[in-house]
Figure 1 (spheres, helix red, strand yellow):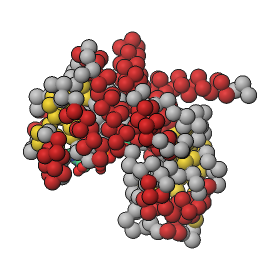
Figure 2 (cartoon, protein in one colour):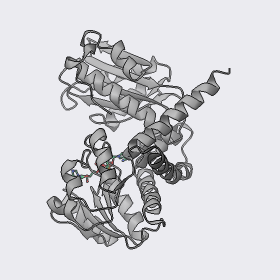
Figure 3 (cartoon, rainbow, N blue to C red):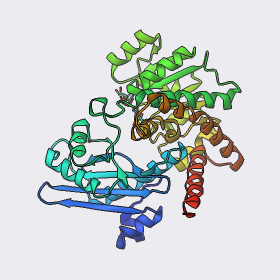
Figure 4 (cartoon, rainbow, N blue to C red):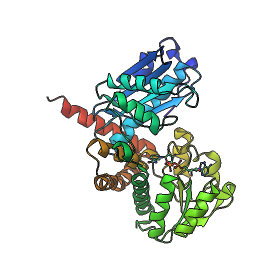
Length: 368
Ligand code: NAD
């Protein structure tokens, strides 16, 4: 999704509603409280499928327009992620303008919780960058419209095992598309980032007989996972993109699928958990196709996280969350089919599935 440079845009004179209209955002709530210093924006992109859900990010934005643009972009992304995952959720996102290290306190978070509560469930929040468990505890004191809570607070806990399972399932579907069989036995897989998701993914892959190589800037962690699973440690991260591999699984940072890495990668499949893997969707979405690489779109692959949160709202049951995550297999295959039929990049095919589902379900709601 493109980031709008508002200063160069004709929208500069009409920056708010006109910017919302670009991607048909439903509602934006601006929150201000002089007593606590709270300045926040809650963006609700679309509630056709259900209440809008997305995390709250606290960030020291340079100005309000930058914060608004981020909230609009991220809330739209959440609509697409939930829609393509088959969840009855809309897309929302909140941003608190400020430095999360120095400007956070109980009063500010609770005031923010009151703003969320005033929306009566149209927006449900969760953790995101700069907002942690303690903050969620404060927000929860003022509203029940909070999800993705730790088990100690009655929530579903760490979503990473469900996310990792979804990545594994999507990787199998990608293998089926590329090689006609979804077995990963003997396939050389490089996993970059052995955090919560990466570690769990490595265990699935090793169990399946894949030849797994792993890299993380945290050497202690990577060595311990290698010892436990038998995966091979990559000692120099700079050589990672030049390695002989079948599958590249980015599970650390965004934007690692870029012109430099694509000029070096010799893999057949890219499938991993990291958000925003394509540095530039327009450029690198096409470049992967030209290189003959199958790219499983990140927001489809890593939907296990939001699936897990969704089942928290339904009365949590991990089996149901895992069973829903299994559907990522068919969704991934369907995306490859649409991409081929319509000659479009896979991320665009995923967007079309999401848009169609929102449009279709929107029609049935008109009838009552
Ligand atoms: P995490 O913070 O537990 O792990 C990230 C790991 O990446 C850490 O071990 C870190 O040391 C490593 N890392 C950082 N920079 C690196 C680099 N340059 N090279 C190699 N390793 C590096 O995060 P996570 O929960 O495992 O999530 C991984 C990715 O998946 C993130 O991009 C996250 O946004 C995305 N994601 C996670 C979930 C989830 O359920 N946890 C859901 C959706 C998307």
